[in-house]
Length: 231
Image (cartoon, rainbow, N blue to C red):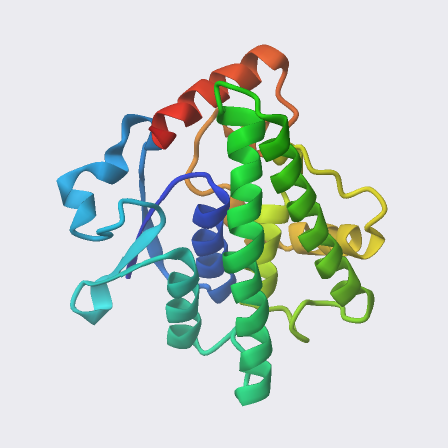
């Protein structure tokens, strides 16, 4: 049994969608980021970096894994799926997984910070991170123009990148004109396991924040909560 410690964020969805796709049994412990539960001593023993997600594999002597990409690879290796079947296919999956972890995640994350959470709006920072996120989307679009999925077959690479691209509106980044990215985004979203994983953990107010379509008052309230995490 896998114990998943998570919150409704792109990195959190990476873990829960992977678990759903692999059909591995798991239990969920929601972590309230706004209450800084991720900084409590008990959680730091699982993830010394104080971030979500994290897992504990109860079937492997309570082995703990942190960092979303490392969690995904651990689970895929455990189940023998979603990671490629030979050295080349595995390398393709890892390349596009690292693309998300080293590019889209950090750049879009900073776009979120400066566009939504920063108490002072800094146009240079907003433009910098939104433009770089859009550029990375264009890289995905070119790849998807020639491939149904990012690494040949559906894989961890699709799960990881989709988890971030799906909330592009919250970062203020448009996907207009990226027809291949849009096709792929819809195809991933239509998968039942993705829909189930995206709903983990259950947080009633989440839908507005993840779509970026909350009204102004609600969006500001979500931003205020987010600022607590950044302090």
